Image (cartoon, rainbow, N blue to C red; front, side):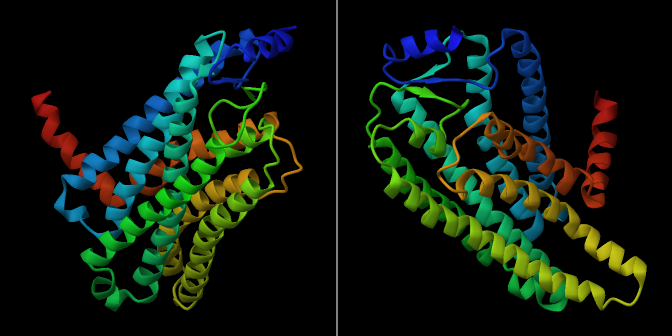
Length: 316
């Protein structure tokens, strides 16, 4: 009955309607509270990373420079989706305007593509640090770090412009119900009344190049890292060296795994409720766990945080 009522109201909407994360009212409150808590923790953790690194000269190294950029991406990434999702959870009609939908999509894809490239760059940074330690400062110069960061944002921007424009010019006839909780390419292609083969091909080729290229750079970097770690004679040395990479590998596995399942699988597979859970992994989970895995558990950052607390505690 509820789905029929939604379908009836779809034709009255100038933009789009979301099916949403949950349709049963009994679960909406719990989902709202869980997402709100995760969002607050994400904002707090990533903001802390930016603050600690920017205001401590001892952390002004290439690794932490990339971590600050990652934290900025995660802050924007989750903010593009989460507040609107929380508002929609409280409304009966989960509506978004046509322009608002594609602004959200453009920003989301830009940040997602940039994060893909940045994770690959961070893997290369670990390769240089572990496999070429004596040449690290000579290779990872400030100018190179800035250039690589600009490159990752530029690639993300170009990928987003092409995919967003091609999706926005599609005709959306009477079906304006997006079976998702935010504007993403696969569910929008499902509701177009035109053959979307060319769009799917562009997503696969252009988006796939960004995803697979970044993943290959990461894998190749870690193959060399593992080879270098194996050659370390002491077990403690191996454990200490590889521990700096385990966090990155875990984040890469979650992020790339879920993104590949969403964008690089056969188009014949329809967008279902399982995809909502998959998208939560890269839209909400990774922005939360990235600062926890990368930075907060890092001993250098812990020492800086402890010094800050010691300085601020008497004032408080």
